[in-house]
Structures are given as structure tokens and as C-alpha cells.
Length: 469
Image 1 (cartoon, rainbow, N blue to C red):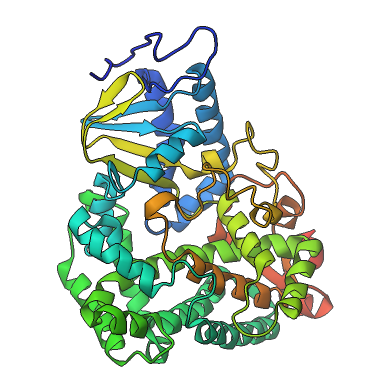
Image 2: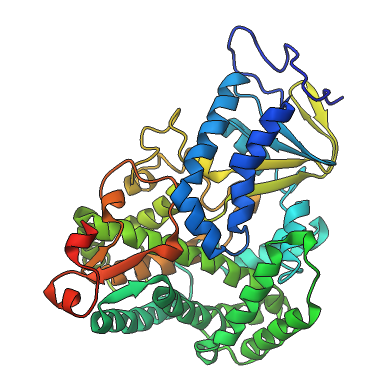
């Protein structure tokens, strides 16, 4: 049986300081601290789409630093045991060690389903048939389909030539725009990124369909409220109609055409909202990596040199990929990985009923100074030499059997975008925070501003190099 709230049995807490696996219930005051300093800021920023005012507030307060300190103290107090938080009738078990992460992610989708209560409420607003929240019978069909269409096992997708050609067209236009204006901000970058994504996913006819993304964003804002916001089926129907129209005419060399040929138009239409959702996070990670490159000449120099040695076309750019992965490690785009137990789960000396939630807090594990000597440092080399991939606490694309099947497609587009936009000699306004380690725990990508270096950029209103120093 599960222990009572406040249980401090010897199974849960060893007096000799040994690590224990039996989860402990937090006291009322500890629960309040976790809600205020850990879970509250995650909800405030928006799990599905970021809220600009909340992310700006989070950066000013560096909320991830506070969250990490709270969890570090609780982990030390309870000998590394998982932490149980009660929210009314909902019980959440927070992982505190990489072994916990491994058990949860390696044990998905059974007995730890990714279709958690919170996630089903959120994603049902815009992707009710997405593989992530599919019941197991549907998942057994949809997951292999996603893996096949996204070429999960291949570092370069079969249609990689077309994908990288789209990146090249759009980044060339973006570079020209920035050179003319002397400025780069998130709205400018995101507009270019979405043109690339719509072309890659849905084809050339969708390139300028900004209305599609506007509808998706409106539904995602609803998703921030999960079950607490009424559904808008008419708006979701409008999104599905636009997607279906693009799928019908998508040309070869797009994910829509590949999916249509693999399983039919209806099958791919059901998965596309989730692919678009995932690409939004990839754009944020790329923009943050660009900010670090602009602040660190050595990083930019390596990004500029790599394409020359990698060859033409959709070549793997290991260092650029490492920079994107490092961006997601340092500033996770998935704030928390959620799982629900599908059956009773025995953990240490306790048994949790089906429906219990299990949580991996990405920012805590990705910067865990107790085990990572590079916790707060920009270290893309860790993704090149195997250190990061060997650590179950580092899960930028989740892990285990339900890890993100689009990882390699995302990294292909993101790395080639980063390498090309880095050709601009940019000055980032937050250079003093990014030029050296340790890096700030919280970064609001929506607030990043760049200018071109030099007198011309200053005269045209761009950010002065001195302002970025």
C-alpha cells in the first residue's frame, strides 16, 4: 500500500545517508514550495505555447535557478527518493535521479503512458488523434507509421535534399532581410522558420499559409488551459480543412506526400498538427543557439567552417546539431515530461495506483551540477563524444520507446538553419550574459534582439556592438 502523507519510514529515508528508491510524500509546506517555485512557473509560461509576458517575467526572475535549488534541497533531504506531491485528488511523483528517469521512460508506453491526464486535456484541443495521446491499440498503429514517415532511424531523411533546399531558400531571404534592416528579432526569424516548416511538411502551396499557423496557435493557447478551457471544434475543423487541402496537393519531397503514400491522406492529416507543434519548439531552440553563437566568436567560427567540410546537400552537421541539442539541454523546450501509470506500480516499498502521474522536470536534470561538470556551460562537444547520450538525465527529445520520432528531421532543419543564419555577423543584446559560462538558467527567446555589427548597423538603428558587449 502507498504510505500516508508525511510518511518518514526507514524505507523512505535512511539515517545513514544511503540513497533510497522509495518515494516520500512531501509535507504541506514543502508541497506549497514546489507548487510556488517549481510547477507554478511552468504552468504560467505555457506548456503548449509560451505566453510572452510570463516568459519575460520568468527570465527576469530566473525561475529555473530557484526551481533547481528547491529540488536539490528536497533531494538531499530525502536521500534521493522520488518526491510525491498531492494536488487535490491528483498525485504526482517527481523523479530526482537519472535512474528514475530511465525507469519511467524505458517503461513507456506501458506501464507509464505518455497520454497523461494533463497532456490529453491539452493536446485534444488541436491534435486529438496524435500518436502522443493515443490509446495503446491506436498507438500500436500510429507509432510505426510516424517512425516510417519521419525516417526515425536515419540521420538524414530520404527527402533530405528537398528539406535542405527549402532551408537554403528561406535562410537566404532571411539573411537579405536582416542585412537590409540591420535587425533580427523573434518575429522575423519565426516568420522565416515557419515558411521553411510549412514547405517541408505540407509543400510549396502551404509556404505562405500564415492563417494555418494562426489557427494552430489559437488552439494551442487553448491547450495551455488543458481541461479547463472549453473545446472549439469549429476552429479545429477549420485547421483540419486547411491541412487536408494542402495534403491533397503536396508534392514529392514533403512529409505530407511521404505520409500520404505510406498510409493515406487521412492517416497523415491526423499526425500533421503534432509535427507542426514540435517544429515550433525547434525554432526556439535554434534561435537560442544563434544567440550563443553571436556572443561567442569561437562557436560561430566552427559553425561557419563545418558546411565546407561536410559537403553539399543534406549533409549531417555534427557540431551544428550539437549546438541545437545543447540549446535544448540548457533551456528545455519541453518543460516537463509527463507519464501516467496504466496499472498499479510498485516503486521501492510503495505501490501507486493506476492513474498516478510521474514527472521528469527537464531543467532540473539538464543542469544537475551534482553529476554534470558542464551543467551550466555551453558544451556541444558532449553530444559529439557520447557523454550526453549516455546520460538518462539528458532527454532533449525524451527517451525510451516513445522518444520523439522526428528528432533527426528536426535536427536536420535546425542545424542547417543555424549554420546558414550564423553567416550574419550578429551582435546579440544579451551578450554579457551569454559570452561566458555559467549561462543563465532561464532565457526568453521571445525577447532576444540582434543587430549587425559595425557603424552601418548603428546608423540604420541596429544594435550597436558596444551595447551588446
